[in-house]
Length: 360
Image (cartoon, rainbow, N blue to C red; front, side, top):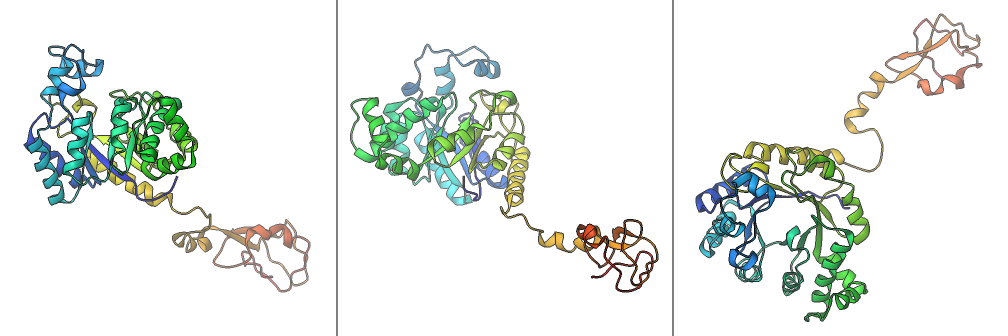
């Protein structure tokens, strides 16, 4: 995977709790933390969930079980006007605005009204071939989260995307999509448009189920840029993901973890988000070059810490160097201790006092 600046997405999600004021404060927090983008979620509850569907276990844990998933989501919708104001506000403060569409109406609304750098496919929509196909109507970079997925699931999703980009027609079957995926044109489209995000879909995700090596697996299997969408507690795992080569990091954040709502408890607060961004930028610098040579700052220390060959006792000219009269010590100049055994058995070409550096 290439090593450029990591694109950091501060995932506001639904942590605005339906309030435009809170949403703008989240934009400010993301900007102040140094994130490249702030991302919300665009959906119509009527379009994405049946009214009788129960909440997920983590949603019940965080919000209680008094209402349905539909009722909860209905309160968290962003109106069209809120979208407009948030988009304009992000442009004003100079941070990328992103929002994940969960239904066709929201997808087309986002694409028709805003110039977004990416379309995000969340893990829950990875098998939504209808949404995937409609995404291909827009020649946009696509971020695909792979939580809850096998390699086969990811390939199926990419097949639907490839079919749309290459043929610009409605597929008759998944099998037809796969045939296009395996063509040179299909592979070129995937490599041109797709970034995959490794993800573990649990809130918070247990460390033993993160499997960061899956990033390497995804890159090897699909030959596209790979990043990481994090749901763990704290900042250590996304920082580690950058060290493993993640080109993109997505992390939920909130203004206050104790606020009511499904995602606040598994999110970073603003100070933690700043710390994560700072740590990632430090890691980017620390990754550096591939060639192993002394750095500029190291070179001045070479003569101070590396040992040279010195006289272990007084040595007269013509005397043979032995392990008894030679030793190695730190000194300001002299022959590197690396050549100690090269000198053993040679004759001294001048007199040496004890601790005096030997010369060729």
